[in-house]
Length: 390
Image 1 (tube, rainbow, N blue to C red):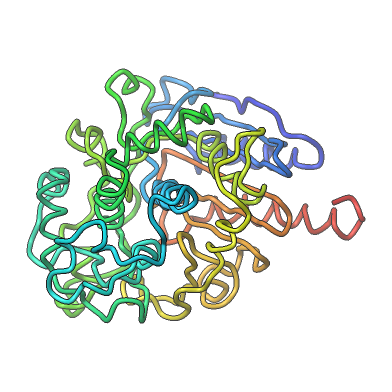
Image 2 (tube, rainbow, N blue to C red):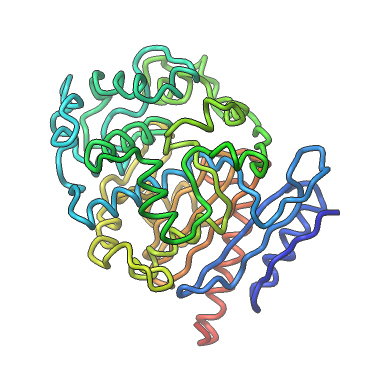
């Protein structure tokens, strides 16, 4: 049996025990979990299997396609550009990308991209995965569309388009493709094992994802013109697309990041720690505060459930507390990826939890495993607070 390696400081040994049990039962195939408190990793564990046939172990440097967990770094990149004065989250997108103003989008702001409120959550006309991976062409199509709702008035999850939109914006504002900006300005300086797409030299250590059960929607019974259907069913998501060279080579920061829990945590732990990681300052406390400015709080017109979004991330409390009741409700931001990967940044407690796996589970926000890991961590944290140890 592929054992769980790494370390879990007291009192978080229970997290390692749960991961071991889930791998032994087959509920988990291969996974990694990192918990950072006040800038220090107190849990860094990995284990299970690299492949569905269980012939190779999941290693410390195994990475996988993390789907929408990529969005947490894409929005971090925009916050960094805001921090450096390259752009402002309050600027109109058209200031940097004039073509985007077409068809009533002249008042779409940068923060609307970051909060899923721009009205451009999918492609209006039929599109294939190959066409989506042709990022310049598929992005130009988005620039021509009319928004599907009045920008800024509601969220509608930008499942795939968020990366195309943010990517073009960053390229226009900085002169660098987003995957290069992330490599040069974030992952590189931090030594974080994270990349948008995957360099061919890293393909041997990419664990292929195991597709999840079908989404809990019967698109045939829904309005074909609804944002939900146009976002999720054009084209229907195919997890195996992530194994193709076209996917791995593309710059699609909504869906094709490759990393593990340690790589994501290395970047995102900056948020609860005042913008600094091991003395490397990326964001100011003022920029971090922008994350918590509520942009929408109510039914998401694509996901169909209530969510609270700030600038770049989902926020605790509000609609989020109804839809994902197992998340902390204090000053916290979060997101995750299709199948269950998860990132939770608890600013109140200076805590960052990240979880990445290869066997995708059911659910839209997290899966049963990510829920159990999260509840375990915050139950322990709250016990410590009650005992005066935190």
